[in-house]
Length: 231
Picture 1 (cartoon, rainbow, N blue to C red):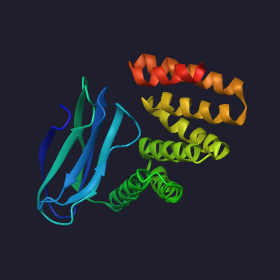
Picture 2: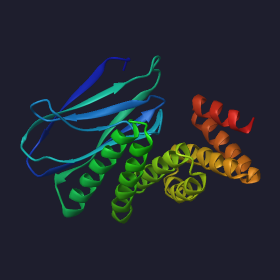
Picture 3: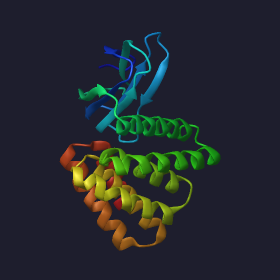
């Protein structure tokens, strides 16, 4: 997959069907877009997990038709791969509908985050928290971890290091339970929060844990970031 190119997949769905699709990023940062049969954008996903971990789509089809999934990358020198998996395809249950609604809330938060203003960050944080509050009781640990991680990053950006430390600390057990590539990103950010708060012992422990995690993944960008934090 080259920058500027798109892989497009036909996704036939019947009205009321629930689609939960994941794309495992293997050293390749990708974005997903689900399009309606008429080409209108329904939902997109390009989260703050970088080139590792999953992007996902959760959607209940309002009508029968041939939908389209677009996969693209903004990487200048893409060297990795991705793997698509249809995790769930069935008539939507009430839980599925809540899952899809939470993903729409998460997508709204992502759009607000990209505006990069104080007001938009505050609105995005509220949306991420709303999504996390639905993901967690549904047992969606990765989605919960990402919503909390994204909240924590925006809190750090907005100068709320203490709030970020609490939120990132809540995200970490979910990521650890999955042994997910998100773990070093969370620990690195948590180290940053403790660094700002003046707890250098905790910060350095987290930076070093993040460094080891990034190295085990082969995540060079993450490794460089952790090394810069260690100084």
